[in-house]
Amino acid sequence: MDTRYDIAIVGSGPAGLSAAINAKIRNKNIIVFGSSELSGKLIKAPKIDNYLGLPGITGIQLKDRFQQHVANMGINITYERINTIYAMGQYFGVAVNEKMYEASAVILATGIEYTKALKGEEEFLGRGVGYCATCDAPLYRGKVVTIIGYNKEAEAEANYVNELSKKTYYIPMYKESLNLSENIEVVRDKVVEISGGNKVEKVILKSKEIVTDGVFVLKDSIAPDKLVPGLIMENGHIKVDMDMKTNIEGCFAAGDCVGRPYQYMKAAGQGQVAALNAVFYIDKN
Figure 1: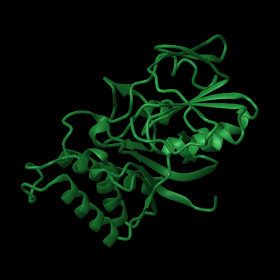
Figure 2: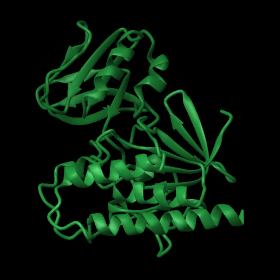
Figure 3: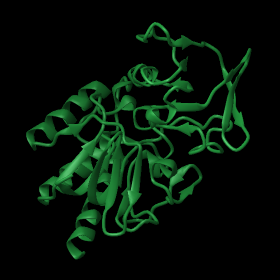
Figure 4: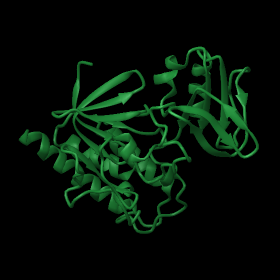
């Protein structure tokens, strides 16, 4: 790629957008990765009474205010799913499918909605378990692949994998109707465990087993320490100091992902702190 961004911001909730606004005000070149809904948690809120200056606002109304604010500042949101963020010393490599973005600093504002790992998922990560089907599908050309999908977006990845694999199983972790290629076998059952020896060999379900060469677990988001190798967690949250610094130089975090209370106002404030310290980090280096 030709562009190295000053700051890559992961998340488009109150923390991520607050970070984006404050970084933009300080003339930093930013890229924001997020969702078209901005925040799944926000749009589900029926009424918010403790956001200063906006009493009784609904989550959707607050989302619309956020959207208008970032649009007025010329901030765009990139609707791409990040697979891994690598600390490269002087910069970070942000891997998105077959692409790699670069940024001098990173702000994690991923929220707290990542799904608990399945039994065997972490054990076999890199040994048959992966989080990006479009990245690793060529490794399973002519083989049997099982996809555990947590959202509708996983269906497109399953269809792509199916073009290369000998056999594709799809285990939906949701109840909506599916848009899958005809020869993909849908298995509606509870996943008990991903198992094997040196590598994945099968997926154990409540009522049966699937013998498979590889498993893709496609979630809305993954745990931060899986997203950023080497990141230190504490009680299920990213460990940060008062400046929103993580243990990795140049990597900051803000919002629900760093701990309670899970409040929009607190998240927005931490996003500002993270952005200001990321700007200071960039300017001194």
